[in-house]
Length: 290
Image (cartoon, rainbow, N blue to C red; front, side, top):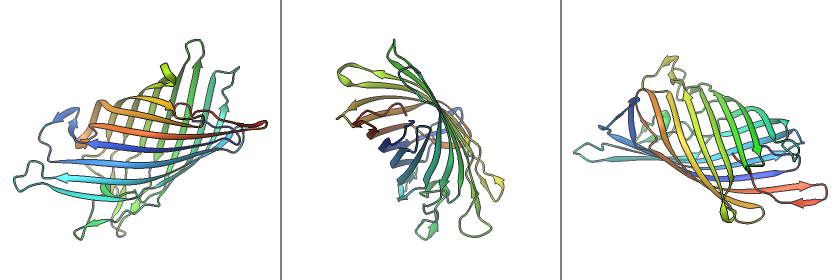
């Protein structure tokens, strides 16, 4: 969401990602031997520096759980990790500000993912794979955009946003162990509006694609792919300045490089606090579509 001068939007989100499916390309496999569950708590702060510039910062806490040996007669084994994830800091610019006379909003931004999380966690004396670490250990460059159009006659908002992340390389344990996650592009197209009894709805289609990971400059098999997900949601204002949003997310299409575990479903819930400061006093509103 874009915010104007002096406005503060704080969001706290919990997300449960159940990674229970196994795919090769576009084909779902039934002989899966492991599953992963990731629970993430995300704090996001947006603050308006001026009527055109605003800053966004995020911080996460991540819990990851992987269960192996699902089809092994000797039994299952579960490995868990948790910790503070990497941070994100972005400076954003409103090219067009939405108002009573202008139904359009257009914003762009750029920033960096900051490697503050641990990347060398171990289990039973063995170093865990990169996908089980709380962070990537590398600086990433991030670009972002938001476009929205409000149709007041129909009382709906159409929005599109996207981001591109150019990933860096992390030297995990020594100079000969350099890991690079694949570059990532995410695009979201959605519509939102009010429902009865102060409830609101959102319907979103999200496309995500990543290139393959690399280790010591070599492309790793069974990494990278593209995903198309459907995410419906419902929101409700708990007070003049506090609202809640609940979302579910399921995959519509997946095309993975090689054989990989992938998302079965995602559940999330968010609390938003919106503080709107004006020259004539204090006004309170609700966060828009994210």
